[in-house]
Amino acid sequence: MNARDEEFGEFIRDRASLLHQTAYLLCGDWHLAHDLVQDTLVKAYQHWPRVRQADSPDAYVRRILLNEVRGRWRRRERAVPVSRFPEGREPVAPDAIDEVTRRAGLLQALLALPLRQRATIILRYLEGMSERETAAALGCSEGTVKSQSARALGTLRDFLDRMESAL
Image (tube, rainbow, N blue to C red):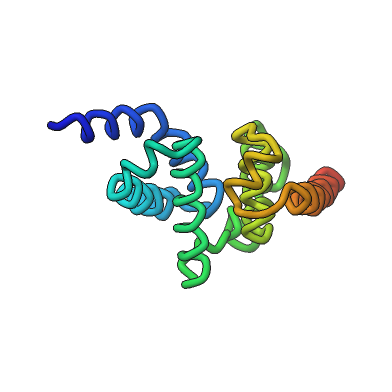
C-alpha cells in the first residue's frame, strides 16, 4: 500500500459513518445511500491530490456526495417513502413505539422536502455546519441557505403540528 492509499484510507475511516448518515438522510434508503457513498469515494480517490489540497477536504467530499445525490434525483433513482402500515392495519392505540413512529414520520417529512431544502437542513442542523460552510457545500449564497432553511423548518414545523394534533 502506498502513502496515497494509506492517507486516503485514514481520511475515509474517520468520515465514513457521517457520510453514510448524510447520504441516508438525503435519499431515505440505506442501500441507495451506500451506493452514493461508494460512488463518492471512488471520485474522491480519483481526485485525491486535489481533494487533499482543498481548503476543506471534508467540504470537497461532501460536495461530491451532494452532486451524486442530485444526479440520482435527476435520474429519478430516489426512494419513495411508503406508509409504515398497510391500509386498515394501523395500530388501534398508541403504544411504546410512538417515538419510533414519530421519528419515522419526521424522516418521511424530511424526505418530502425539495432536495436543496433537505440538504440545507441536514448540513446546518444535523452536521452542525455554519451558514457559510453550508453555502460553500451547496454552491449557493448564504442568503439562499437562510431562505431554504426558513422554508424547510416551516414545512417541518407544520408537519409536527399536524402530527401532534393527530395524536
